Image (cartoon, rainbow, N blue to C red):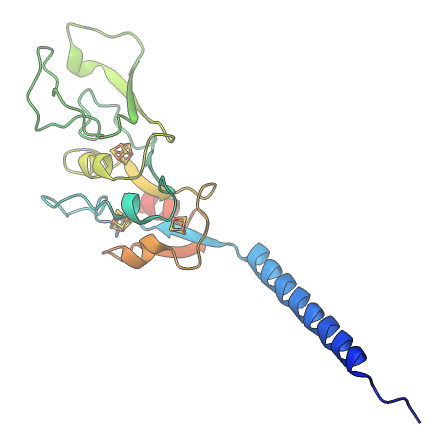
Length: 202
Ligand code: SF4
Ligand code: SF4
Ligand code: SF4
């Protein structure tokens, strides 16, 4: 006949079972997280700031203001394959501002001065409109406010600037607060690169 189980033994067994269940749960969660290939992305064909045909509206700054990170995980990205290297880029300049002595708009569009305008090759001062410039976004300064995206959109620009969730910065929240607040339902989860593929179709 077996000995009756003491209270101490019962407690010990319960604690071990609970520990195993806890470990199992954590392991299952980690396995699930590691295997999860989908990431938060922005559909540029839905985002108000890059959506073609939407003009004369206030820029949507939800990406800049609702991310849980102090500096949003969203950044503007210039697609150099599409960029026209324009003399007067409507994503760089506030084209509604007064013209200065050089014939250029006097104000920049970016509130954080995050875009550099770099001349390409020799500049011909006698034919300024035929000079080309590279527009480089400083990712450490950009907060994804979308102003340059809206400015570069066709027909004023060539639509080469879009907003992107930076996956090296994003915390991959289960419930992305930007997705919950996006007025265009432009956030989706898919394998990385799906948004880029959508952008290329535009
Ligand atoms: S919240 Fe949505 S519509 Fe607004 S900028 Fe971000 S992706 Fe675009
Ligand atoms: S998204 Fe806003 S902060 Fe970033 S480069 Fe464009 S205008 Fe500047
Ligand atoms: S998932 Fe979280 S960290 Fe990533 S963009 Fe959304 S709110 Fe920001």
